[in-house]
Amino acid sequence: VIAKGFFIKFNYTTKSFYKIIKSQKIDLSHCKFILIRQDPPFNLEYISTTYILDTIKDKVKIINNPTAIRNVSEKLYSARYQKFMPYTLFSQDLDEIKKFFKKYKKVIIKPIHSYGGNDIYLFKKFNKNLISKIIKKHDHIMCQKFLPKISKGDKRVFLINGKVCGAISRVPKKGSFLSNMSKGAIPINIHLTKIEKKISEIIAKDLKKENIYFAGIDFIDQKLNGDINVTSPTGLKTLFDLSHKNLANLFWKGLKA
Image (cartoon, rainbow, N blue to C red; front, side, top):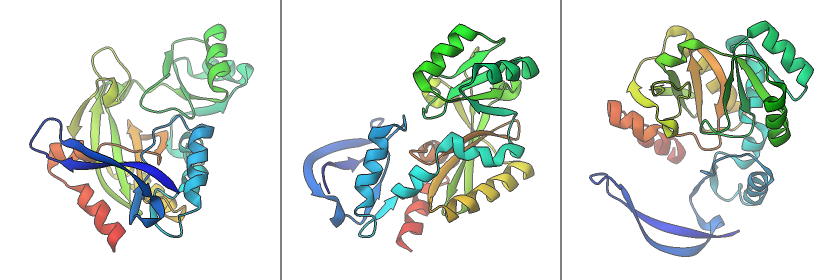
């Protein structure tokens, strides 16, 4: 498997903390490690990448394992943890979605294969036309009871090699319900509650069994929000900036053990 690679020099004392030195074609089977950092949408192009990398996964450590990434379909995988989540429905049936709205009133709608707060909507009532357009674009969608305490922030928890290793909170900007830093949310240092830690430990152990080495999960008001981030979880640099806790070192030590 041949890929075009870029050699990078890091300098954490500058705002732009890296510089691309040169590019070169590389035989990926000769690498020690490959990190899959391809952002969703989790579409056929993404799936094709995992199949290509499957051909060399016995020769080089790939994080996360490409087969495991296909098996752990982020939002859909969370369905097994619904007892820890807000009331949630996965569907593309308008009648079922309408019933969900009738019961829970304010509802968050998300595409199941996107990321970074993209195409997420807060509905205060059922809107057949707009929801039909979302379904037409994304097929199945995730409907979730709105949790107003998102205004105080969510919690991103980092899971490495089956262990709960750290967390940050992300507070949405004024007037927003999106806690993604790419959408303007402000990160702060926090600690997990006993409930959050217990749930995180359960999921961390399950993901290790699935051959997922590195993942991020999110909580709102002590409830798992349904995103099991295994494709390209972010936030380690932010955690280091807030607390000087260096999970990157822990990440690499675990791989080299």
